[in-house]
Length: 129
Image (cartoon, helix red, strand yellow):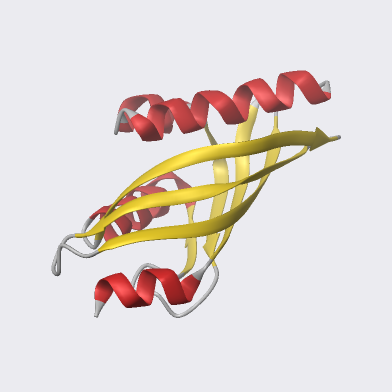
């Protein structure tokens, strides 16, 4: 898969997330997909398989309503890196957040096989508390 094809796969995943389209997201996932969210946030941890991705999304969206702004998206081989921001509000407090983020995706067989999220944990913590 070319770098431009890998970036296109990542863009489709972000489009599905923006629309909260779980069917579109599910169609983009490799059967052995693994999601890792760094930090000590309520949704942090490692999630495996498409069911695990569903669990991750429920945990994330049960706490915050994020909108991802892609600042840069580039690929090297099967890896795609997204540098951007996540803006929104915490559901329990109504407080806004504006967090920098870096996502690293691994694309295999045209599907997302790994998604790692590194975010400004302090920005989320302020909104959550």
